[in-house]
Amino acid sequence: MRRTNIYLTDAEKAALDARAAIEGSTRSEVVRAIVDQELNLRHDEQSDVDLALVEVAAELAERSRVLSRDDVDLHIA
Image (cartoon, rainbow, N blue to C red; front, side, top):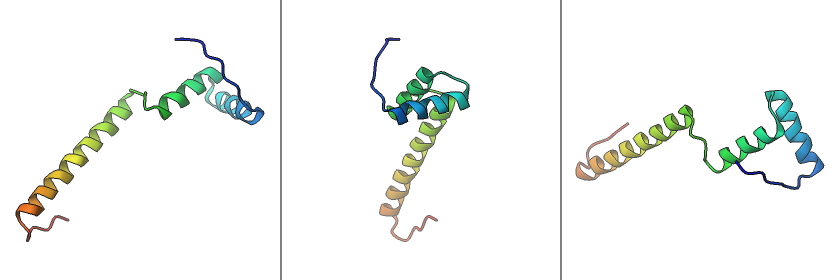
């Protein structure tokens, strides 16, 4: 982990401090969580499930497209 300094407005600092207090964490932990989420760096179990669901949905959409192309009378609900 590397130390980084950023400039925040009073409102940004207050919002970060409020969230940290609610979550029982530090301002730094809140900033890291926001950065991870924004940059899609979270690799927790839920994001793995979300990614798997997106991949399954894409595969089903592709199969549906192929089946519909091959059989114009096929209707998939």
